[in-house]
Length: 139
Image 1 (spheres, one colour):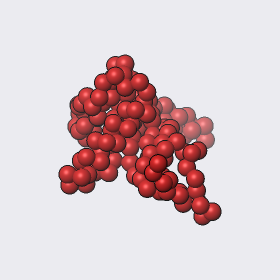
Image 2 (cartoon, helix red, strand yellow):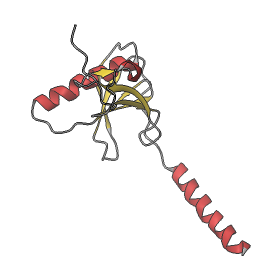
Image 3 (spheres, rainbow, N blue to C red):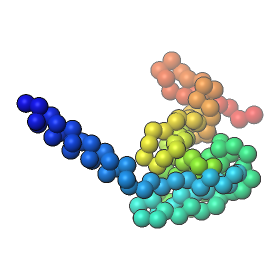
Image 4 (cartoon, helix red, strand yellow):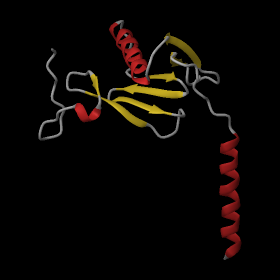
């Protein structure tokens, strides 16, 4: 009975070591530089500079959101975008903005979409009783 359990442990341990041996893509650590990450399906994704001298990761996310909206206005159909800032990855989609240290690791939910599609800090969004976001009127 112990032999199959030990064999299973050896197989699981070796597969975990094989996964650890694979090189993982790292975001550039350049201070204040915002990147768009292109061609994720290829072996060597490209890091394209979007903006320099960005003081915080949220500013980089805003530049990437501008880029995403520009592409959509020109007829693009991709609603998702991946960027990088000072060693972290930025993921933008219909739900909002998430940050992560790796491409496939856990993501921290940072900015949510308001009812009118703008990005805001999640706690600042007013919601109706049923949980839907309430659109914020422009100033």
